Structure formats: structure tokens, C-alpha cells
Length: 435
Image 1 (cartoon, helix red, strand yellow):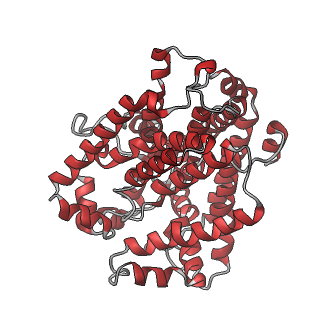
Image 2 (tube, one colour):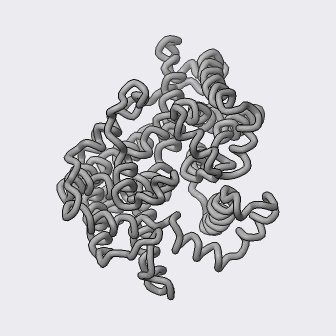
Image 3 (cartoon, rainbow, N blue to C red):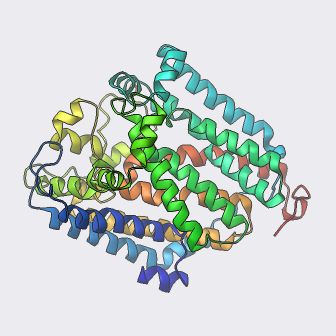
């Protein structure tokens, strides 16, 4: 936080480095303290005795956070962020309606093919009914392109929303919200919060950034309560088909039990990254050797379907869950090892230095890009799509989660690419009000 304050001139709540640091505090400070105060601390984790390496896991994570700060403080990130040109000066989605329709059509076609190949409407209803072994198996056997297809309109939705807020065009705001709801069609019932929470945060960021404001303390506290109950607890309870037998009503009554919800959140798998990392640093490299970059190959090759590359290396999460939690992995479930897990699995301390410092540089570049183009709706949309993933990466990992961010961002950049073909400049931006 000190590095962020010095290099960025203050602490901006929307700065990805601030989000990253607050996420670290939740997962690697508050969670361990809450566990230590619990009567069940040390009993077991996923049926296995917790190793005596919890302290080492916190040290590894703190070491990684330190080098994230080092990377953020380097001038390279600032230089990169200021050199990237704004993606568009035109603030009228009708200029790009052809490209927007193409993205939506391909997205809908991909998701429709997934639904059709697994039983049609019955499968769609099962997606909305919560997680089940049948749904998990179906999704595992399908291409991620089909399951993630609705996410392709996320960035476009945020951009249209930002323009609608600035121009006070209610129709565009409504269209943006409809697109955002569609983008979550596959994940809401499954309670996949790492999918839809970044989207909600992106809309909130776009709203405040367009108006050049930040939320007040009272608005922030209210948002924390609402997100915790409706955005975190309710989806977790609803997706459990054994808990939500009576539907949304029973799930809601369970969610508003504050003490139980806090215990489930701070003692359950939602925030168990420090526990999982403790198992990892206990086993790697003492019992299992480093993978020396193999899982990064998987991350880079993630766009290549496994049907085309059967021997493609497994992701870090798959590798670690298969090694450390084989029983739950075979049942189709697993845990996340945080952003510090994959670097440790590949290169140990060296991996933490290389990966986390690079991530710090990227976070600085993204924030400087916003600072340079803060009056540009397209730049705001790009920033708002990317910045919330600081928490997703902290909780899960870059190699595991970057593909989802790319799915949300790249179609927007392709739509905005039409600006170069139209050859319009800032002075001919559809006559909409400019800040």
C-alpha cells in the first residue's frame, strides 16, 4: 500500500493494485486469524490433516505480494500504460452495430449448440437449478468456448453502459444491462461468483469513472453488505442442490443468517487459499518436484482445445488437486491455490519473484492507461473489465483465470477496431457530449 500511495499519488479504490492488496488481506490475514479463533482450527481440510506449514504459506504469499509491489513501483509499468493509445474516440454504439451483432450472434450460437448437445431446454433448466454431478460432467466434457460464449458480450455491455451513463441515454443503459444478464445465463444458477461478480463490479466502476467520482463510505459499506449476502452467500447456498431443495426461498433464509454465513465464508472453501497453499508448500518440492514452466505452457495454450492437443499439460489447479486432493478431484471438485500457487509449483521462490513482479507491472500499466484516458468511455470500459480481476487472480491464479478476462475483453477490442476503418477522430464523435 505504501508503494501504491507513493507511485500513484494516493490510494484509489478502483486501482487494481489496491484491489489486489485488499484481497490479500482477506485471504492471507483475516482468514488465518479467523481460523485461529475457531474451535475447529487444525482438525482437517477436505478430510486431510492440515500440515504444519500454514505459517510458511503466509510467508510465501507475503513474499509474492512484496514483489508485486516492487513491480508496481517500477517505471516500466507507467511507461507502458502511457504509451498505449485509447481504443476509440467515438461514443455511439450505433456506429458499431454490425460488429456488435456479429459478436452476439456467434456467442448465442455457441451457447445454443452446448445446450442442444446436452438435452436442450432440460439441460438449460438444470444449469439454473444449481450444481449437480450431471451438470459438472456435462460441462467438463464440453468445449470451454461453448460454455464461456455468453461472456463475449461482457466488455461490449460495459462500454455501452458507460456511454449511456455519460450521454444520459436510458435505452443504451437498458440494452447494456440486458446484454450483461445474457452474459451470465450459464453461470448464475451454478453460483459461479468469480464469473459474475467481476461483471457487477465492472458496471459499478464504469458508472463512477464516467462521472469522475468514487463511492462514498456509506455507499461502500452498503455495497459490501449487499454483495456479501446477495453476491457471495446466496449463490453459494443456492448452487448446493442439497440445501436449496425448496428453491430460492430456503436459500435466502439460510443466507441471511449472518453468523453462519460469516463462518461458512471465512472457514469454508471460498477463502481457503491459505490452507490449500499450506498443503502445496508442504509437498512441493519435498515430495513432488517443480514443474519448471509446464503449467505456464498450459496457460499459453489454453485457447487450443484439448481435442486438438490431447497431451496438453494440465493447469496448475488440475495438477495440484490431482496430487494433493485426489478424492475430491475425482468427484469433479477442487480448491484454488491463489495467485501464489502456480509460481511456487513451477519455480518456487524464483517463480514468485518473476510472476508477481510482472503482474505488478501490468497493474501499474492498466492504471496509468486509465489516468491518461480518463475522459474516454472506451478506455474506461477496458479498465473496468480488467481491474476487478485483481481479486479473481488473487483467489485463483493468472493461468487459470486469464482466459475468462480475455473472453470478456477481446470482443470489445475487436468491435472498437472499427474506429480505424471509419477514420473518425475526436472532433467527429457522433455529436455526443464530451467531458
